[in-house]
Image (cartoon, rainbow, N blue to C red):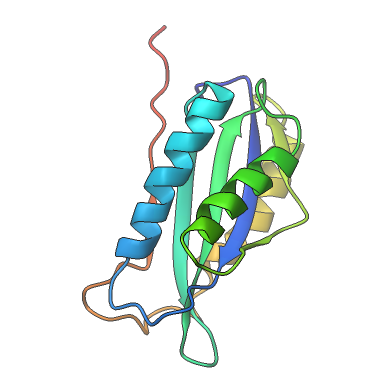
Length: 146
């Protein structure tokens, strides 16, 4: 990977308006990534999964993956993300209390994070989207050249 250790943070975003596509989350992620990369002076990766709740309203599970040499805990990330989302008159996202610090060769912490995030792959809340929307999107963080 690009970094010797990474920090993984997850939150859930419930838009307060019906969505026919993913333009809202795409725009939010563009701003969030730009501001976090500037604040931590480091590239990051992200992913989101669109789900439909029992009330028929979509929500998004978002994962941020940051350079753990620059980030120690999720407090600063949470504040920045909430500020960005709330400044656009959207409801405050709910951050998962569990975050993950993964070292490059530590299989145990990798497996814990993998197990935690595997929740995003469940199928029971998927498949109810408009044709103009995607159910997920993930960025790529290219490895540095040797």
